Length: 334
Image 1 (cartoon, rainbow, N blue to C red):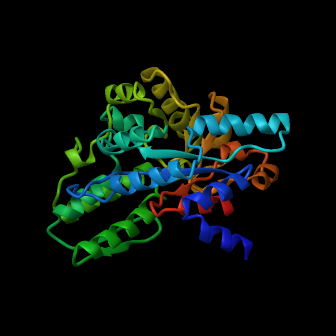
Image 2: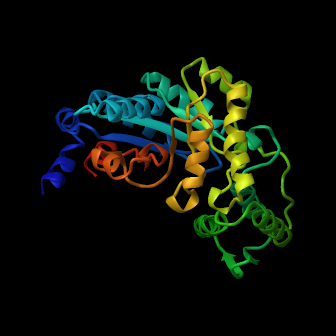
Image 3: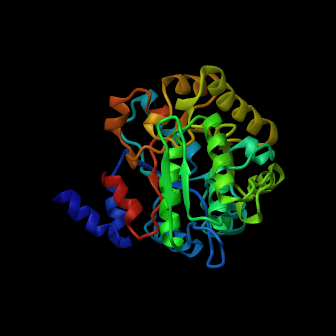
């Protein structure tokens, strides 16, 4: 009952200050992806919603820091056995689309909020495109609205009749396909292209463009931090040892080569517990990371989690972004 009461008050900034400060030892990392304004031909976080949320957090006097600073601070507390760690929130953005520069960064800068973007070097270098963008593009251009897709685990059917059902069908396909190996994904895309009668693009259309290394260096000057999100965005659990080594070590090396102040954290693609293993945690540690970020829902880094999992730094949980006032603060009570 106390927990429910605290959550009900979290939407009121004056009370939120008191509630938030009471949650010592709780750290929340927020996961974001694309940003979209009213004219964008894709779905993304509304910059105005982000602006309202950051204004609310600032009014509530919530500490907002980089996820690197958060991880280091909590790790130091573990070593020193400090009794209490002040609560804080960190924002992260996966994949590094161009809308980070045009829509997200100006809003974060307006409120003097740090944030960290995790990028995929093979996509940045133009050697490949995100497979889900290929899928979205083909569905938008397809002359048919029903695809039969073969896979090693049996064929599945995607069908749609309008924009709403097309979006739902694509999300179901994405959930299925992301568990495939890179070879299987390439085969599925080719088959989808055949059935859609739409060729795969070699260079992404503007709406699917990602930040260049030059873009990132410019954003670094404005306080944005960048980190590694694997070389190709492969689910590491589908990778043999040598590929996992390349995905992790290669992406870390590439980011460190191109950028001046890279994050010391690695971000697992997809990031559910089934998407990576202790092998991948060890690889990230071996190649100089101070921790790794998952997408496991758990909302906060709490003392209980740190005690239960000595390897918490390699499984840092995140909550999915929600712009509603008070929602992020409620995560401190999970």
